[in-house]
Amino acid sequence: MALHIIDHPLVQHKLSLMRDKSASTKKFKELLKEISMFMGYEITRDFPLTYEEIETPLMKMNAPKISGKKVVIAPILRAGLGMVEGLTTLIPSARVGHIGMYRDEETCLPVFYYYKMPANKERLVIVTDPMLATGGSACDAIERLKADGYTAIRLMCLIASPQGVKTVMDKHPDVDIYLAALDEGLNEKNYILPGLGDAGDRIFGTR
Ligand code: PRP
Ligand code: URA
Image 1 (cartoon, rainbow, N blue to C red):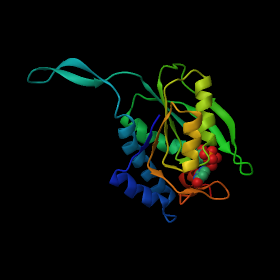
Image 2 (image 1 turned 135 degrees about the horizontal axis):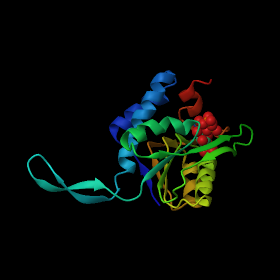
Image 3 (image 1 turned 180 degrees about the vertical axis):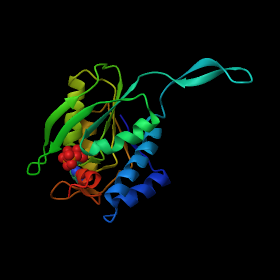
Image 4 (image 1 turned 90 degrees about the vertical axis):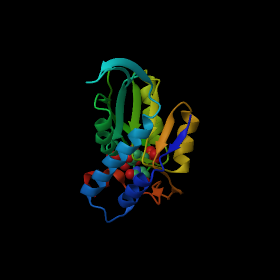
C-alpha cells in the first residue's frame, strides 16, 4: 500500500490553472487530459520489462518491451471519464470499463447505477476519478471490482482530502493511490477544500 503524490512542476502548474474558477470547460477538460498523461507516466513506472531480439537497420539487439499484466482503465462516472483519454494516449491497448455511481446530495453516500468491465479479471485495473472526498465512492467502486474477481487495482485521482485517503487505505490497504494533490479537508457539504469545485459539472459544463 502506498500513496504517491505526483509533484512534478508541470502537473502542479496545470492543476492550479484547473482550480481557478475562471477556467472554461474547454480549458478544464484539456488540462485534465494533460495531467492524466503525466500521472499515467508515473502509474506505469514499475511496469516490468522483458527483452526481445529485434534488428535495427545496423545490427541485432535485445530491446526492452513492456510485459506483465494488461491494463483496464475504469472511470467512475461521470468525472472519471475526463482522465481516460490521457491514459489511453499512453496505453493505447488498454481496455476501458465503466463504473456508474453518483454521490447523493443529501447523504453524500454513493449510489450505483451502472457497471461494465471486460471479462478478463487478470488485468491491472486503474480506477480513475478526479475527486477523492469522503472516499465513499472510490471504496465502493473498489469493493465492486474485487467482488467481480479483480485483484490488481490502483486508484488515480487528481485531488484528495486526508479523510478520503485514510478511508481508502483503511478499507483497501492493497490499493496504491496516485494523486496530484492532497488538499486540506472537506467543507460541511463534503466538498474538498480548497479543491476545484464540482469536477463533473466543470468537465461537462452542467452547472
Ligand atoms: C464526485 C466525484 C467522485 C465523488 C467523490 O462525483 O467525481 O465520484 O463525487 O466523493 P466521495 O469521495 O465523497 O464519494 P459526483 O457524485 O459529483 O458525480 P458526477 O461525477 O456524475 O458529477
Ligand atoms: N465531488 C466533486 O466533484 N468535488 C468535490 O470537492 C467533492 C466531491
